[in-house]
Length: 349
Ligand SMILES: *[C@@H]1O[C@H](CO)[C@@H](O)[C@H](O)[C@H]1NC(C)=O
Ligand SMILES: *[C@@H]1O[C@H](CO)[C@@H](O)[C@H](O)[C@H]1NC(C)=O
Image (cartoon, rainbow, N blue to C red; front, side, top):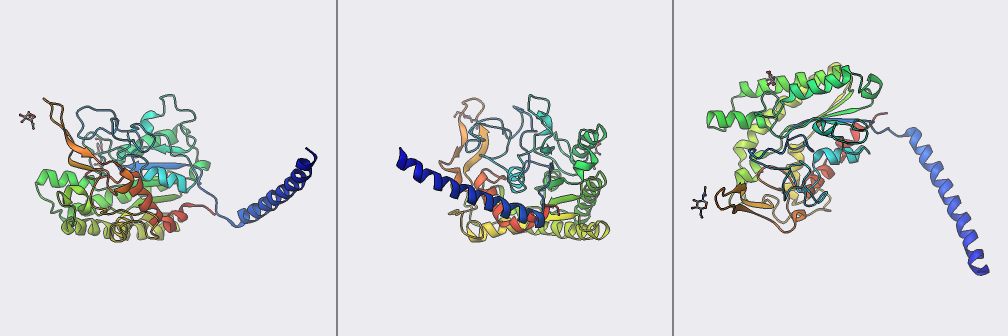
């Protein structure tokens, strides 16, 4: 008993000293440090959706059904993945919880606006969204909440907007014209609309606006099946043209606004993962990053027999892609590890 006390007391004091020293160090660093944004507002498509797509039995993909969400949180949440998606990783990086999906804000979520809001909806484009609200409509939803003072200017000034697009506008165009050849004039109209959307978010009061480049969708399983060995470089080259137009537009916006706009280069980050078979530093490995977890005809079920025309891999942590178009949680983690330097720019001084 006595012995225990004599050991315990100095240990305790020593710990207190260490803790005090730590606190001093932390507060000293804090003065020089940037501050994390207080809210995150997300717009875009299935790469960023965390629950806005309704449970629609007629939709081609059913993110509210098994096996979506098997890795996190262990059940479907409307995310187009086995687990966390880009939104969740960006939120974590800026030390926020993932913002509540707009559609679920009235469904019993506690303090649904605390961390911002996610308006992203699977299937969205900047021009059209078949059944999904397009980018303009998503920003309309946001503006309505700003008009109602749910989000106040003093909050918006220290918040981040994230715009995530995988290229649905081009997918719709290709389907309509039965060709993957996208005229430059159409790309210009997409980027022009996107640029207006970015400026609109800035004008609404959000002073950090991040936009993603199109990922190399020519490397998604839709284009690499059945061998999953080589990407469709024609499709990737078109994404690169869009990205170049976007970079020019953002550079122009930045001249007008003291560098408020940031490009999150998904294209380069995905490419780097494919080349390195993992993240840049080698903490994550994928044996074949082009081979998805879900093989066969993703999400197709024979309506008469109920037999699935696809298989789901045993360990989604071992694959970069989840299905035809969407990364797994581990895929997104690798992408975001590559983006850390850029994500750091989301912090405020
Ligand atoms: C977005 O969708 C709305 C509603 O369907 C439509 O009226 C509008 O024209 C679309 N916006 C663009 C830029 O195409
Ligand atoms: C569904 O399965 C049945 C029985 O195997 C087969 O005859 C039918 O062609 C299948 N339907 C489709 C759309 O593949």
